[in-house]
View (cartoon, rainbow, N blue to C red):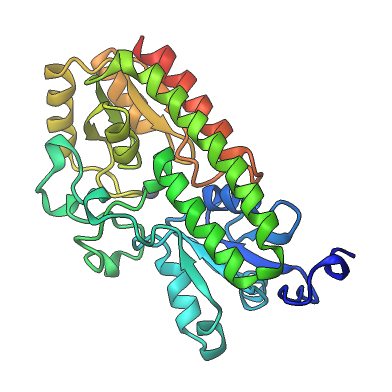
Length: 308
Ligand SMILES: [Zn+2]
């Protein structure tokens, strides 16, 4: 056993491996990459469930209650988790860390782009489909930070710190894994930076407001989104304004997103005689340590084909 070879002052290893529960797929990829085989990492949302409207099943509550550490996005994304945690005194004591903690205030985006900025529906990204709670999080920042690889590096640093604190006996291993993974994220950022240099300032329209951080990082001009509120049909007025922007700005493609029905975007694109292409929001999808990087690289290829 490793523990026997460690100096007496070293923290005692846990009797059982640390059980970490992540909320969404990108946080799973990042955490599994830092944990390696040193901790058990599970994701709360199944691979096909979006974070917009998650319903807890009894076995999800069990997994929640047996977790040693919860790693979540924050920024108002996991209202459904907070409600379930706060409903029970024992659950409230499970340590939890928001991977967005410490991200500078200037790094948050609060308004939808272009045509939508300032409209009442655009002020908050409502990630909760209970219509009676519609205005609850108005003014909250856009939560889709994970699509920015530079944010991913910030999150990985938070994850490393959380794992070290919860399981100091494996600190060196976590640090080695995190260093290697951060290097891969740097490479991903460099690849995106060099590819997108040719498209700086290109106008982009996406299905919902998942890509403002990505677009800001790589100098794409996000001029509009089809759905102002995820899961809510846009108003005819919004669609008319969007079509005007697409024509005026000569937007060449409408990006649909995995997990959302592409019917409306296809209709719009066909009315405007422009193509659609599908980007991955990465909040759902396969749970693996490499899924985040792979998804971002597929998005890069999609952009390459659509924008060249
Ligand atoms: Zn979303």
